[in-house]
Image (cartoon, rainbow, N blue to C red; front, side, top):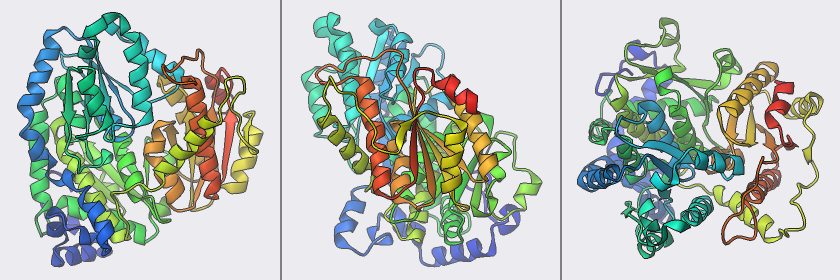
Length: 540
């Protein structure tokens, strides 16, 4: 599977006989046509569920829809640049922030356009790091939330709105919003005279929204040619309608679904350096879409070259190659490996659509609805329950089995007793996400993978609750969960709330911990104190 529109042959990609046969059946049954025509019976025969699915299929036509709104986006970007805005901060969570990260990291910010930052953590240290990276007088904040009620973006907004109080009546010009029509966020943006409120098509789920306003408005502000991105995505959408062996999105989905049927339910994403962050977005798309009803595809991104070989009998491998790079001849001969090639950065638009379509196909083969997220709300509800019982004079505490000191012995005792041979370890870090913490956890991750011979994933909280968190609770009961919390360097209040950001992230960690316990998942929480990097380094 090299470039968009190229023919797929089993000789080129070494698709297994099972995948080739399943692809032939899908073509015979016109699966690609049915999906492209938004036939909800592909996934369910229940009329009530079909209605829910129909309300989530707008992503199939969104490349063309967004192309018709290019002038609105271009006019907005031009006005922002004329005002010498130097930084744009996206205040989001889940799909609305991960897609922006991938676009920013892949393209960078073009000269003459603002620097693009993303805030998707309630950790006080991370919020302060973002604040200190900005000249607030020259910063535009984009509040990004499909529902318009997501707790984290609302808290970010309250904080920065309060910070810009000195701007008086002009304060609204430093904010924009992306949301669905009729949401509380749209109403708030109008009332507070935001610079602009972008009303996204309501029939698109957050994790399928990268090619809509949610991804394209921030991308355009960074100087990225979104018209080219969308055109490539539109070409991929046309390809996805074809009922023959050239249909790469369909074949990729069959590859995934057939793998799950054979017990290969862990997709390892091996990306070229230019595409190193693509896995952030793909991880959320796959985990949240397929991790339910005790089934799921676990995406594993960012592993070391040695760790990707652990538990290989339960893995599939997707190799994202770029430019002149290509999959090795050795790996091309392996039927559980597949190559997805990008000729240049603009092919990212096609790749986004390819993965969305493939996920929908895999969901059909797995017998699940890939457009809902039934377990995401559980952790939110538990967090709200914890916060409702919070008293300022009483610190939030974990229940039995959590909150202990972090030692090699304690970690080994827990993992040795719980890691399953066909399972995985999930590190859930409620820490400041920066280069130091990512490096420290990468080192620990490799050590654990090589010692326990299973894949190890890393997620930063609370962001992962909106992605892999669904898989953790709703997917196969094969995970072993290690949670890290710490003491922020400096806590900060949330305007209008009786608690701080430090309290909020602790409540989210407790809510996640208790929800995993409720589902019978083995989980331990370690408090790393006020120097989490030193604590991790001692083990790693």
